[in-house]
Picture 1 (spheres, rainbow, N blue to C red):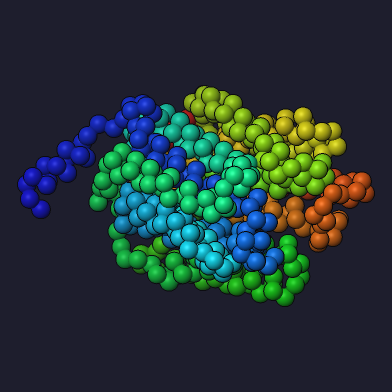
Picture 2: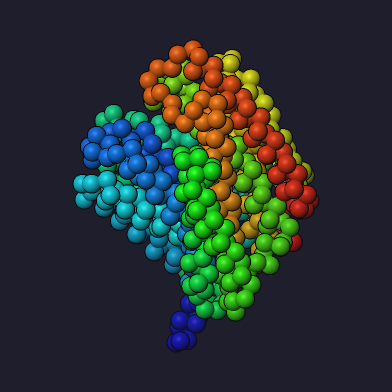
Amino acid sequence: MSSSSVTSSIAETRAPKPQSLRAAWPALLALCLTMLVEMVDNSILNVALPTIGRDLNASPSDLQWIVGAYSLTFGGLLMVGGTMGDKLGRRRTLLFGLALFGLAGLSVLLVSTPAQLIAVRAVSGIFAAFIAPLTMSLVFRLFDRDDLRTRAIGLIVVVSMIGFALGPTIAGLAIANWPWQVLLVINAPVALIAWLGVRFGIAKDDPADRRAGDADVPGGILSVASLGFLLYGFTAGVENGWGAPLTIIIFAAGVLSLIGFIWREKSAKDPMLDLKLLALPTVSGSAILQTATMIAMVGVMFVSTQLYQFAWGWSAFQAGLANLPFVAGMLLAGPFVDRAMARFGHRKTSIGGIALVLISLVVWIFALTHGFIWCAIGMLIMTMGMRTIMTTGAVALLGALPETHTSIGSALNDTAQELGNAVGVAIVGTIMATVLGSTLPQGAWDSAMVAGFVHSQQISFTVLAGIVLVMSIFGIRTLTDSKEVEEH
């Protein structure tokens, strides 16, 4: 390396880091857009499925895979994406993922069959897995002040959850005015803006921050297999029955792959995931709390959509607008989370967040028979609790890891949320199928059907509250009273 290159590298390394969120706005905008587009893609096609079905002559099974292909590849490859970031460089991997994610969105213009759209969704999920784990980890490189890291993580969490909640509303508006392809094509310009923000707003990767060692290819394959089979197993259980041979085979494949993954990581010289990290109480506890919170959140969102449209007869657009209290709760919780973490520390703040989630489930049990105003109150309380847990959990988990493992730590964070997503839908769907049957009418429901649905979801929310309570007891015990981001 020439002397000028060395001098340039030292100057870049010693360059002062931003001392306010405003000073880092290009990079923050890029990271927020990255998380936003990834979360919106999780839910944006649901409202458009009838239109897509007619346009592509898709069967019910095709529509299922159009929705599921993205989440399956995304969830299955999160650990691989996090490892690539730690080994190859977080900024470099994020730029690579954003470019290909945008191109995958444009490729929908060439789609003419359901199989082609399923392939596009699967590829989009693959590249989303290479960008999602790096978003949070890059916040730690962007700032050196603990309060700014906390506020930045909170901002990104809010943007991502707003995207998740508003995805159906945005889709409803778009479908009313444009072809359904625009829902995926929009990924390209958003990814381009994010790419530019990362390229010019975040410093180049420092080789000292990368993980050393060779690529753990067998570990990566087993990771993808275990997460993919287990995530799909929950879907198969709801659709085919938990005792169906196909469901049992899928779960068995997932468990065997997971056992193989653990054995590989214990014996590998350079493992993809150092299992000692999972032994860190703060890491495991934060993951448990985030899984529990997502189980509750996704369960409520899954139920509310059907409640509004089928039980109450609202249009898809009205049902989408009804999600706005989720957004309001996220925004209202912001000042509380920042101050609570600074004053009370991670453990006590998390207790407050979990308490809000549990209270919201109780409110929802009441709201099912008392109208939308109570649903809105339940949504406000739930998202305030969720914002608290997601921000505190991410800060605690990433702060407990060494700099060389922040991307894989962020992948663990996202994987915990994806597992919560799958389990939440599985619990609610199973109880609904047990009480009402596996097939629900798509038109207007009669009073008996509405009464049965309400009863099934009162059971669901009671079960969800019990699961959240038990999981939170284990999770909260592992957290510390730290009031800042540090290695524990």
